[in-house]
Image (cartoon, rainbow, N blue to C red; front, side, top):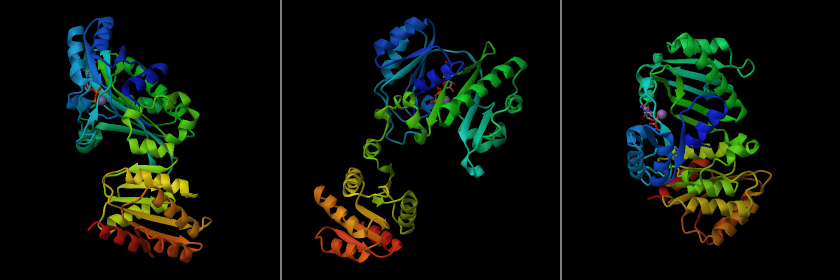
Length: 387
Ligand code: GDP
Ligand code: MN
């Protein structure tokens, strides 16, 4: 789960990490009011779940409350396009107003779970070349990024903080402040079950102080059940409506850009199915795991989610009926397809207990089911249906 910058900064503040003074506004008038209270230069920042706002025109300085009003008016309601939003952009509904800082240098600091290490392991990364071009830096000057892996049992140690701080070229006092920031960041990461925590830029101000000017926090969805205070930070406006619908239906769904809808039981089988669709020359429209049960109700919900995506032109259903018998799956498919008046062609590949009976039921249903034996054959048939 993602949250907004203003929410993330509140969390940082609760963990003793220095952030600028500020408040969030939903109208230009409110923005002016906040600027009056801050009394001085402010920065007006679009709040969307995507980075790259600065380059997209979503971060504007303002020297007076009147300018803050104008900046907020320009940003609120705009369809902000950045390299992370896709070409359609994201509608801005809130702006964060903050006391402007004079920046001497912009650093980068993050904590992420590094799955490439073969076990869950956190990696801290820092760079003295922070700011808006960090992706560029990572691609062309990877040496400018210092890393250290944090073993889950050993935890984050002071020498690791020193190693990062030295890599950033900080003076003694800043090193101390930096050590404090990383330690608190690590504590926040563990206590709230984050999956990514990033401060970019971590500014060195003209006064030599460290200040988190921008931050991004993602949470591990599987940790959310134990954090009601984090769950309530969810912003449905920022989420894909189909994914919200799926979450409510307890269906594991991720929307993709293709046109072959997928309904599969089991995450591994679902990923294999997507790979085979690609191998057959098609593009999957989604990842969807209906779960082991695949009850008629669950199948119907899955159908509704898949067919709400206007790009979908055919559906590939791949169900392994082990404990769940194939004839039961077919009954569910027929009932669900009837209930939603499915108009799209559907390719079904069933395997498992009572598979013959299950296939016969589909073929005799009078609905638009094409039955396939093999998995790759099913993918090829689905792609062929696209015409
Ligand atoms: P992003 O583009 O979505 O990552 O948004 P950021 O919050 O990182 O803002 C982009 C850039 O705006 C930063 O890298 C800074 O250079 C600049 N910026 C943000 N806040 C301030 C501020 O308080 N003062 C000044 N002078 N610049 C700021
Ligand atoms: Mn940033």
